[in-house]
Length: 273
Image 1 (spheres, rainbow, N blue to C red):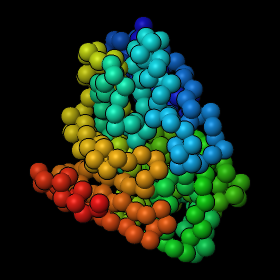
Image 2 (spheres, rainbow, N blue to C red; image 1 turned 90 degrees about the vertical axis):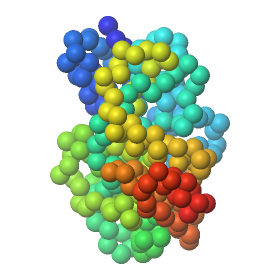
Image 3 (spheres, one colour; image 1 turned 45 degrees about the horizontal axis):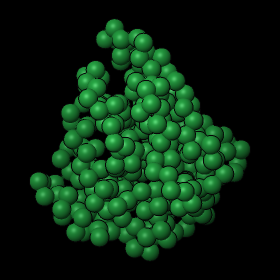
Image 4 (tube, one colour; image 1 turned 90 degrees about the horizontal axis):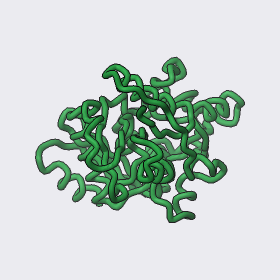
């Protein structure tokens, strides 16, 4: 019996069940083990402040990786955008399955003066540059928690990843898609990471080569920039085109790059640094 490690949110469990179903289709039995992470335990502090206050790398992955190294689980399923660029010794990303929609979306309405909830500095900085008329506010919690806060009137709109809403069957809540030219997605957004101990090749069949290649280029950009949750940056690769953005937190300076070719990463880094 394969043991799959996952966070306990609805979205994380959907992702783990998605992988469990793919294993079952190959005749591989698996069960899901919930692991509580630092990011799950502290819900009253913004992600950027939480990252600044702790030395923890991987607020939503560390405890799961510890369970993997200890042999308590056989594989872990993460949202790729939660993955640090450097993995603990002895672990590897065994598979990156086909990616879901990488765009950000708006739930609610973005009228002038609207109270807009988002926890990501990346979104906040780019939205400040594009829409200085919005009142941008921090919001924490899982997707369903954020939707409930919106429905309770605490916000006029919230900005979320399209992938999470689509996976949970809540596409009907999407008010509009945010153009990548307005808000560039987070590195790895919409993609999953199947993490295992090094040398474990049992789950290689879950890998989608094209998605992995795109995500690896995005992660190379993030690594070169020394980025994390405290740096407002986005990067997305699709159909051979690399799109990235790096902003000041207050939106006062926003550097963008869109390009293709073998030297796109090098040119992108020169453009946004």
